[in-house]
Length: 491
View 1 (cartoon, rainbow, N blue to C red):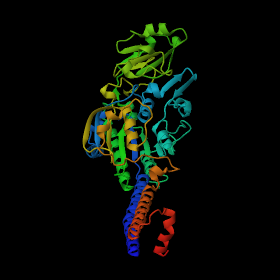
View 2: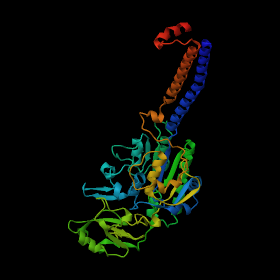
View 3: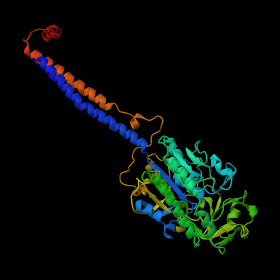
View 4: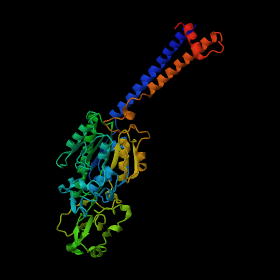
């Protein structure tokens, strides 16, 4: 009977192991499959900026490619961008989630009294890292989180910031065509998975340049705007050809809008204050004034009520809602003209028919915002957002932890589908942590312990059955009975 029990017990063990082993193997395959999937299908995001693309341009002429994105994704009707509404400050706000006073790129032209140096988008000073390092752009955060980034002409992306360039980037060159820039971005996004970028930024100078030269109200702008839609169509087709269209989350936006100017609306500073009393730091419509030493109050008194179409602020009196006070690069006096007005020292300088930089609450300063992709809802229109909210939104899509910022994911989370399609976080590589991508031994250990328990139970069971079949031996210890048990078993 004992041999029968043992044979039955062994059979039971074999059956149990046969049942457990497939579960262990399936768990291992399933876990391994999820690991590979998270690496292979990391969230991908492409941020595109058409400089100076005003929010209402998409309704001005037929825009089939913008309409496609809106039908397949989301649109935000009102985007409050960062003050001042200039190119460099706003492009840095988009990728840091910070207002200009915090990230330090407070204008296209700046003076830093601590560094005693000047910054201008017209000079090589833009490549000096010290101007950019009050903040950390998203491409740096992505790379420090183990991802990869690529940048095609985005302001600041060809600067070594916190010791790091994007993994792939193009040195700024305005003569490089949009199509060439797209080609490089597609190449980076579709590279082998170890080399492919997770986050890309793409910049194009139009329609800003034409808006300055022609003015946004010019009928000649219709062709320029339609041309932007054609360029967007080229990008969409290239994404499709590369098999990326359904994988890449695409955000198309801008840094600011554009306002119409007139030669009848010029404010000449020479009429109010001598140039010997101050240094002109930034250009219209928001002008930074650096008074000569000891001349602050005098200069301010001369400008405070100089023209009804211009307001003068001492730095400490700049309205808090503009978030434009707390940085040494903001000048002691700030002049801001009303919409459509231009501040000049005199009329001998160049004049533009269109400009931006005005109060960021003005409708003419608002940029476009549309997006589509696996993370976004479809055919959804949102009323408003702030441009600084884009940063936490992008971090969420990329599954990385955002740095402290002025934005809020809560303000824009309704743009996203209810359940993100790619929830796995980007983990640093190498090394790849076992928790994220390795094989867990817990199922095997658990199965082994289960088998040991079953085996132990059978051994105890055999002993008890055997003892029951023997006569009771009084006053015998376990050590004394053990040899007899072994003899009975013929072991």
